[in-house]
Structure formats: structure tokens, C-alpha cells
Image (cartoon, rainbow over all chains, first blue to last red; front, side, top):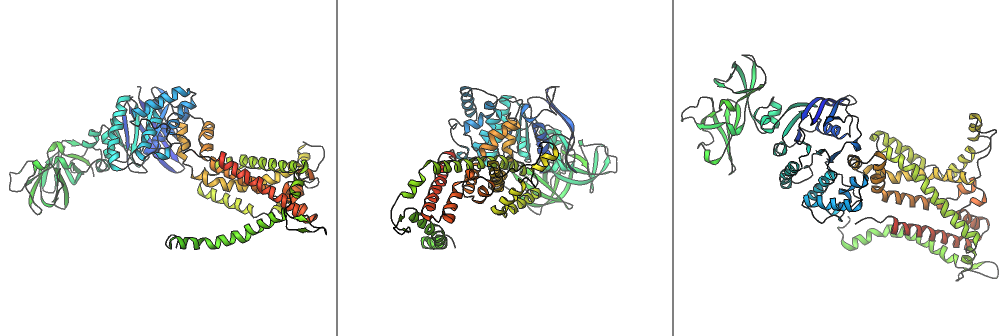
Length: 352
Length: 282
């Protein structure tokens, strides 16, 4: 296999285990997001791919080559740091071509490449500026250009959007993804922002407490989270305590619902969690015809923010959120008795 | 307080420091300047006047050679203490905060040692009877013990010893404030650890290196005890000669003239370095 392979990698700092027995395989040219809360080990894992940390155990391979004992400067990687780490004593152009200077490329080659990269990053003509004259967004572009100057095999980014303001962040996510697809470069991004991961990634790796909790395509993880931590970290989810009534049915209070997705094997009678996504549950007035897979409740709040409407329903002490577009508006108000339809295909069973 | 009282308030804020600088710096300096230009009276005394006689006396090869020797010695000391202090400080900033604090306290404590104490300690350390030469004999590198002082090497060693703690304290803020990601970035861009040190660490901390070097230069230019105690007369610096003229020869006008020359040397070094060496890219 020619992609990036992480094999049984563990990293310990003294008694603290930062990354524990991580096994992952990615196809070359993919964009991978390590997603998780701070302190989950995602940055340590990225730094091990870069060679800035040495794994306590395990191996990292790329394109059939074992990188584990290769020093940083011989790994053929490009990295964008959280602080961007641009060299304050060098101009923009000199920053971008630093790696070329180290490799002994001629001045004319360097100048041509700097111009080419700045054009690609839509920042033409700033070669001679100093770093202090650039805005946050411009600095990020220069940091990306610098990392790509020598066409590295692996492109690593550590929380690249955290220093940007919200509007710029969303635009840059799209731009970075387009750039990555254009270059076809194997890219690993560390982020704690699920929207960012969903926007950019081919493959998301959700991490928590030093371990990989789940990896897969963004939609896979969104639709079929393996546990309530992943479900809560990616998107909003409605969770109901439930009991397995049959291999494909759960009991929630008085109602029995059929479910299409389950994570793992559960015995009948076992306590589990029923999970649904807000945009897949539908609220109807109690007077309307009762749908098959539904629970009863009472509307506790309606939040109409124009583009979408959120209906909060209290179902026997558990709050369910339903997100609708205005055209699906069921005409209910706070205090109304309603039924909440949860189609079997939208229901997942998770370990309690 | 600051800024609230408008211009007048800000001017008043400057009064105490202005008075201090005036009384303790400007007045003595003007007195030295006047003395250095004073004329000899018939009784052998000196009176106010304008004469360049004392400066003419300086403009002989003996004194010019002493001035060049002093400047060269102090430049060498500044260079050596930076060569010792920089790697030390750089490595120190890689340790935990507790280790760093302990080392800084130790270095600060070293500053409390006076030049006199350091000079006499080194005299004993380099003596024939109680000095390091005995260790060389013991190891088998020397036949019999010998005195290492007075010598140029002894003056150099003691002054570098005196200067290193200052260098460390002057370099520490800049080096510890440097973003560690900068060296990591240069490593990911293909630089070996050594290459990264010379292309990133040194240039980024250059302003601190320069100001530390200038401070050590000016500081050791004023040292008077170490060159006398550990050096032969040919190792005496301009400062020692000034002391000699002022205290033993009672020639205050000439001592003042030498002091003015010393000040001009210091000032021109500071000026030259800040003009050409410390220039920052804009």
C-alpha cells in the first residue's frame, strides 16, 4: 500500500500517555483530519508524522518507506504551525524560499518559485514585505506557500485556522481543500472544529483520551457514530435512554421503535442509547395521524432563525431537537402536544 | 497618574529622574571636561582655562597603543563571553521553569561578587603554590608547579568570568521569548539542527546578542582591579592608567583627559554598533 500508514504508534511523556496504540491507513492524495478535544493526542500524533516527536512504540510509513527513524529534515514534509512560525528576520519571499536556500537552489530559481507560489496563494507582489506588515490571513497564506515550496510528499497542518477570525476561517477551509485537491498532496490537518473537518476531509479520525475512537468518511461518522462521545462531538444529537426489545427494536418509555443502525452487538433487554440527528426527526401535531416510529411529547421552545427552525420537544423528561426548513413547518407552538417521528433509518443504537 | 495630568503632569513626572541624572552624571562630567582642558599655573597648580596640552600628551604612541590594547582586549572579552553565554542560555531555556529559575538565581548571586574579590580569588587560583598548576602536575601534564599570573591570559580569564553572568542575563529574555516553533519550522523545511541554529536562532536573537556584546565591552573597559592584580604593566588598560594618574601621580587634568578619551571610545562603539550592527529590517 502506497499511502500513509500508522502502525501501533504509542507516545508516552514520562507517566503520561499522549497517544496509545494508534493504527491507521490512508490512501496517498487524501485529506485527513484528526479531530478531537484539546489534550486528546491529535497534535502529538501529527508531530510524530512530522518527526518532531519520536514514537515510544510503533512505526510510521509513507509510500512503503519506514519514516520512524528518519530525522525531521530528511522526511520531505511541509508543515504549517499553529502560530505560523514565520521567520521574523526574513522577508516574505525569503521565508517562502527558505527550504530552497537550504537545498542550494539558485537565486533566480528561488525568486521564480516565490512568485509562482504567491500567485497561487493569491498574494502577488508581496515578496519584499516584512512579516510584521502582513495580516493574519496573509501570514497563513505565506506559511502554506513556505511549506509547499519544495513540493513535499506530505503536507501537515496544526490547527491552521485557529489564529483567523470566523469569516476568514470558513473561506480558507474551502480554499485549502481546493488547493489540496488541485495538488493531490497527502494532507493531515489537526483541528478541534467539526465543521472544519467535515468541510475539508476525505477521512476523519476522531480522537479522545489518547486513542482513536472512530475513523471514516465524514458522512460515515456523522450517520453512524460508534459511541455517544463521537455522536456528541460531531454535530448535534438527540440521545434517549432505551432498552433493546428485539434485535432491531428498542423500547423508549411506552413506545417501541425499530432501528436501522447499531454500533456493536446488544442483547435483548440490554440498556442502550437511541441516537437521532435533529434534521432527521419530524414533529407533527398530536391531532394528526400518528406515524409508525414515534414518541409523544410537548413543545418546550421554538427557535425560528429564518433559514431554519428548531423545535425543542420535551419527551418524558428528555429533550429532542428537530431542525426543519420553513417549508416543512408543522404549525405547532410552545406548549402543544406533538408526536416526534424518528424513521428507522435515522435511528442508531449506541452503548449506554 | 501617567497621561492623566496632560503635558505638565508628564513633565513633572520627569523631574526626579532629571535631577538625579543632572546631579550624579552631568555635573561630574562637566567637571571632568573642564579639568581636562585646564591650564598649569606658575605654582604648579591648575586653573580653569583652555589648553589641549593633556590631550596632546595622550596623542603619543604609548597612550594610543594603550587605548587600542584596551579596546581590543574588551572586544575579545565580549566575544568570548558571548561564545560561552549564548549556548549556555540557549540550552538553559530548553529546561523546565524550575531548573531555569534555580540557574538564574545562581547567576544573579554571582553578580554580588565584587571585582576585587574575583581578582584576588583568581590570583590564588593561578598561583604557583595553591593554583590549578598543581593539578596539571598531579595529572602529569607538567613537571613542576608554576604561576599562571600575572599574564594576559589571567586578565582575560578573570574578566570573561566577570562578564559571563551579565551576558547570560542580557540574552535570557530574548532567547526564552523566541517561539520554539521557529526552529521546528526550519527543521521541517530541511535544515539540520546546526543549520537551523545558524539560520534562525542566531539571526532572530541578533539584537540581544549585539546589545549584550556592547554592554560587556563597556563594562570591562571600566575594570581597574583585574588588570592590575592579574596583569603585568603591559596588560594595563586605559582605566588602570587613569587611576594611576589620578591617585598616584595626582595629575587630575591628565586623568580627566584620559577619561574623556575613554568615554569617546565607548560612545563611538555604541554609536557604530547601533548604526550599523543593530539595524533591523523594516
